[in-house]
Length: 278
Image (cartoon, rainbow, N blue to C red):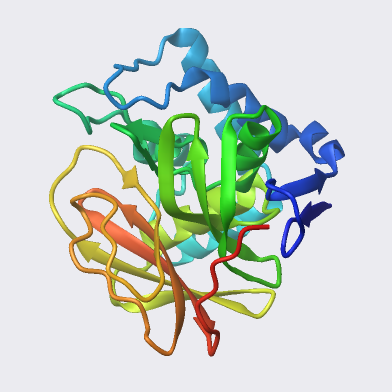
């Protein structure tokens, strides 16, 4: 389905992707949403009727998938979300597409934009945790890939890169996952498991741990992802003190929500720190 640059003399992360994937309905619906967003957080966004139509079309496609319905069935068993499809869809719209400010009152951010599109604040890339978005930007020549820090079984990768004039010191994403998979995983963990007991998921025997913490009231879900190896790192004010494991390597996928923060913690056990430029 795809090939990654690991140890090869090239400056692209993705050397090949089977673009027949993009003909699938959920991928097409995702790609239809991309032009609706501007990454600059200081630019106001608002959803007109046509844009809302595309957003709800995306949600319809996602909600028809098997992985989403497995997630929904689990949440329904726990009585955590509405049983009515229309009500649940509106809840998802609020959680993922509700607009909030990250820049002097400008309504220029949403959870979906932060995770699936990426944002610019000053000269920093914030969020951008979906592999297909990275691949598309890289293919268009907008990404200057600077090497990987971590990758394991081609399940997830942690990398350095520049997006035009904006820098991502350490970022990461699952590799090759469908829009419905990432959307369902994060929706599940956001709604189902909060507190010190992590939401634990295995992807191809690769452990994902999700822990949620209450932070402050915000009107909508605010999703961000943060990675760090052997050092403290702070991507924004919602994360104050994230420590890496000195015996391993950890990727933190953090979702700051209303009024919770969810950390998806990907643990790389018994590996030494590596930073390589392909």
